[in-house]
Amino acid sequence: MTRKVPPLSVMLALPLLFLFLSSTGTHAHNITRILAKHPDFSTFNHYLTLTHLASEINRRLTITVLAVDNAAMSSLLSKHLSLYTIKNVLSLHVLVDYFGSKKLHQITNGTALTSTMFQASGSAPGSSGYVNITNLKAGKVGFGAEDNDGKLDAVYVKSVAEIPYNISVIQISQVLTSPEAEAPTAGPSALNLTAILSKQGCKTFADLLISSGVASTFNENIDGGLTVFCPTDTVLGGFMPRYKNLTAPQKASLLLFHGIPVYQSLQMLKSSNGVVNTLATDGANKYDFTVQNDGEEVTLKTKVVTAKITGTAKDEEPLVVYKINKVLLPRELFKAAPTPRPAPAPKAEAPKGDASVADAPAGDDVGDQTADKNGAAGLDGGKLVMMFLSLCVGFWLV
Image (cartoon, rainbow, N blue to C red):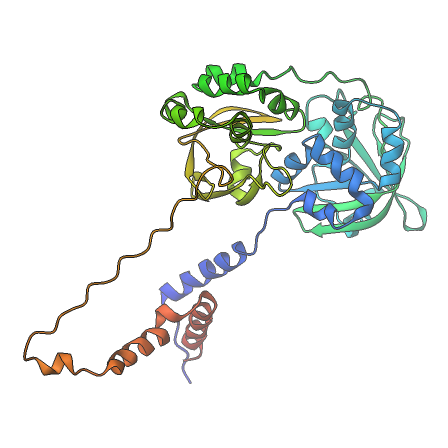
């Protein structure tokens, strides 16, 4: 039997198909969610979020996190370091390379010096931002900061989670000691939210924060992470008559509804669509809205109104301020927008005397519907792929 060479189009399409299938299986990692499954690392996880290291870890493609349990974190916290110094120490526990459990036990020449996020931050002089990994006797693996006189403070305990070659989370026995990482660190310059708003076309919003007394609530949340959605002066100008009719508590809730107590860059908003709580959320009073994006456009849906992010006024972690084209109206204070009902289709009138149209049986269109369901339009992606692969194999065998 003579084998026919498959058409060129099929040969070119096969690599593209497999590339498509492999790309759909790629998922971004989330260190907070990974560690949340392990209560023994709750303190470590909490400080990754508090220092904003979690978001930096999630943005990187190849990373290894040296996690320590709650007992080990207690020894670090007993030193009463500032939050910014703790960030440097924990940055030393994030390696900018992939080390799964297998790779740890197969290090070339038995030892390796690897860079960390502390070194990448620019705050680590010389070699102080590097970690030494060494294979020891009896299958143990030791870890130590390079600026700690060659001491290996900790040993490998176990693998917590591995997504080759994206992220590896492994437990080590102790917090790594580093004189440079533990040196007193000054915090960033204070961010003046109302001043930022006033300079970026949101002066009316800034004035309302001050006059209502909620500016302090916004400011108290900056260090822990804050995202503010600011209606521009033009937008608020048209809304002021409705704002003046609200009571003082309602005005406060409305303004607090425009902030969420976590730093969310634009890329993070796009990759984490869903319901978010706001500064106004209080128990049963949900005061939440839904973040949704269509390509590059990000919208905020409140059940009452849908607003769109039109620009970024400030993005300096832990604070980000976005401009929006509408005031966010919570359903707790305003009536939900009515759901539009589709207009009924007009009934076609049969021409008088045309019995063939008037007497047509109701089931005559069933055949067409069945054909549609059995056609390409009724197939899901998986069936189409299988048909395509079968076709390709057929060309090889004919």
